[in-house]
Amino acid sequence: MKTLFKYVLTVFSFLWFISCQPQEGFIKKINKTAIKTKVIGKDVQLIDVRTPQEYKNGFIDDAVNFNINDDTFIDQIDALDKNEPVYLYCRMGGRSNRAAELMKARGFKKIYDYSGGYDDWSMTE
Image (cartoon, rainbow, N blue to C red):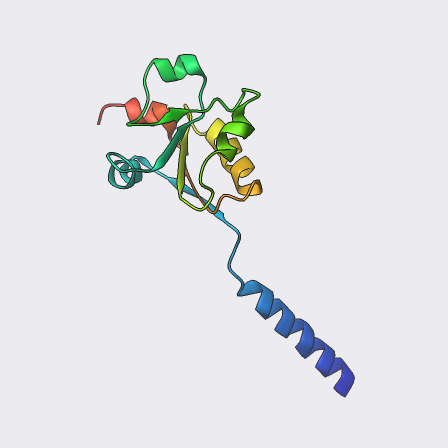
């Protein structure tokens, strides 16, 4: 019984230790208000993952266009600073979510996904 107790205590201690370790990056969904207050006019990595044609028709602030469907997308994101926050958007949130997951898997630490996308941004208030 004493051995079983020691084993259980060891397992719980290990699980507690693992749960307290810092996570390797996160993806946070953000809205229009967050874009207005944390991104517009700031020196941030703002990435529009839509097609060049969509980008040409309008974009947010100083966003750069890295088309997630292009073969060069991985090379483009690999040129970014993985330790600095990155803000992503597309038209409605699907492609930016996919880009966020790719970036997290490639070691980006802070990823903010504007899930409303350009459609939400361009709506009048």
